[in-house]
Image (cartoon, rainbow over all chains, first blue to last red):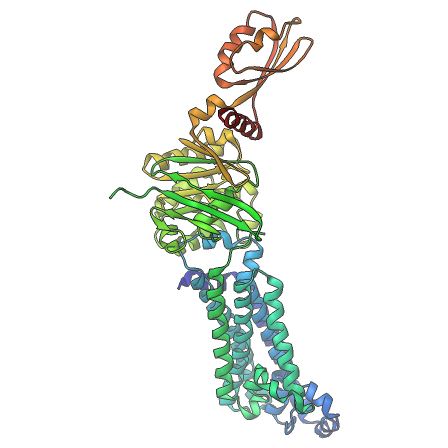
Length: 267
Length: 303
């Protein structure tokens, strides 16, 4: 595998990654910092509890979430929506750029005229995408680790690590899917659209299947459901997370084989 | 066993979208150590041919071999021996030339660093600025350096001197000749006869996806037409000039005579008009399209 391609992928995106990290760290820090004041509001739990079920489902508030605990608060405020969103946008963007974006810009032509196999190029870029996602997940987890003693979040470090791994798995699946679609078809729109659609559908199915039982059969296609909600309170589903990672790997390998079969497009 | 030629194609064909025949049954042999000019107007199929050599696109039928290595089955091994400048070179925005060339060298594995530095110096590459800030010509230089820097056995250049000033164009020509002198092979695609004829040993002419002719530059030159416009100091009988072999009088306007003449007829022409007072004499190479028409007429005449 051309390690140089992985390194260049990281080098090219270093500014973006620094920006993402600053944004994610700032967001996580603000949320963590307001925890003490939320904790001191005795009525908050009751307020949340009085929300209609639809609203709670939509905002990722699961049955049994204890929002006055640090873990419950962060599960609702960070891990149910905002952090997955950050990670998905980053991963899908990076994955779509890696092949489809480069091809769109006409930069793949010279690269693939070099003595490397296309599939190896796809795999090398896949590693770069995964590492980018990992850095941001690490930044989010690290921020919570720092704030934990400061604001009394009383987190389980094992579950914090699990939560970060769940985020990473989510990002890797959708990032690799974006990369693979861009490798299989010369279209940046598809490379962004397919994983975005899958993520949106997966989020909805996971959030709403409690309310609409006919959605139940589709849960297995939801990466959110497979990994499991409320990771800081309940941990993640190890088997489901492995399934998500395996699905990402299958997509990546399929994309790396399909790119061998097609013609490179010129812009 | 005889050494395989640098490039050999067997009925190489490419059809896009089911009906656009970009390349039709190309049978071509480029020998080691020669500079081969691949000449044709825009859209004739030159870049398609090159992209087939490099396995960037796959043939609809037929095949190509680089040093005997099938471009599809042994593409990686074939491309290891090739340096390539795309016709439409796009570079990363943020990297500097030094960073980019370094990255390409690592991707390549083995690069003659001293030679790379020498190339950068010869072409005057700006090494320390982000690539997006460079002019088209300065970016093209980087494309040239990366194509030559590993001293490849075969250099494939698609319109390499576009955007370069004349001084650099001649430097690139020199580079091509040096490569051939050291036993390397150069495949030079161009729409400019002028560029090709100063560099190439042999020339293949392609039009609408078909190889029309392969000839030496000398052979082509004797056939290539010039447009000549002579302004005489007095009215003259143009018919007298029409007697010279190969010359056709295109038009006369009082003392101005316009004619087309192959290069071989120029000597006789100048001597014939020298007996009259001459105000001006302009001779321009005919464009490629006209050379094609001429080639087609020859082909028709031969029938």
